[in-house]
Amino acid sequence: MKKCTLALGCFWKPEENFKSKPGIIQTEVGYAGGQSDKVTYEEVCTGKTGHAEVVRLTFDESKISFKKILDLFFKMHDPTQKDMQFPDIGTQYRSEIFYETEEQKKDALEVFNEYNKKLGGKIQTNISKFKNYCKAESYHQKYIEKNR
Image 1 (cartoon, rainbow, N blue to C red):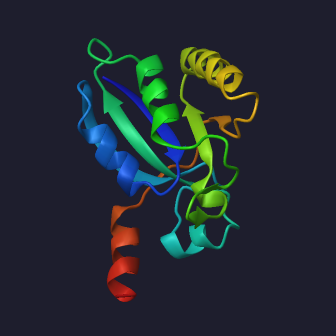
Image 2: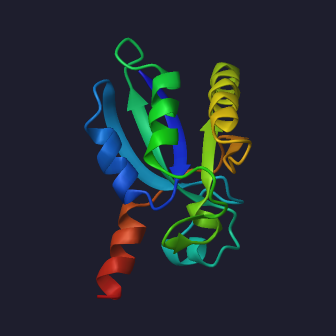
Image 3: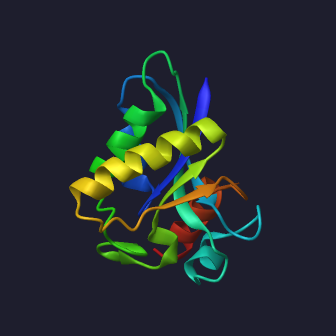
């Protein structure tokens, strides 16, 4: 089993979309790319932590390739929007591919370049080394409960 982490706006809808894809074994929502591996939803929403809302996938490479996952990633959101996926606005809603291996980095750059060419050079997606992941479910759920 392999893992990958993707940011494509608010994480709930992408998680739901990826769950139904053959070869995706597990999905988890969280935050990645910031300065700490411990962060709350409220902190992420300030825009000061550097984190993005992400979906972390565990997948069976014999059934779905990382490149196919990236193809789905680019089709599931608007990668030309910077720091947002309408109507959600903020750096935590940015488009980003977090690579965990040099092979993932190579594949990410290749797929990025293909889509960037198709979209006239307008893609705003970042490609970054995976760092400071924090699972979000409990933090996010507490926030939702508190603010109902």
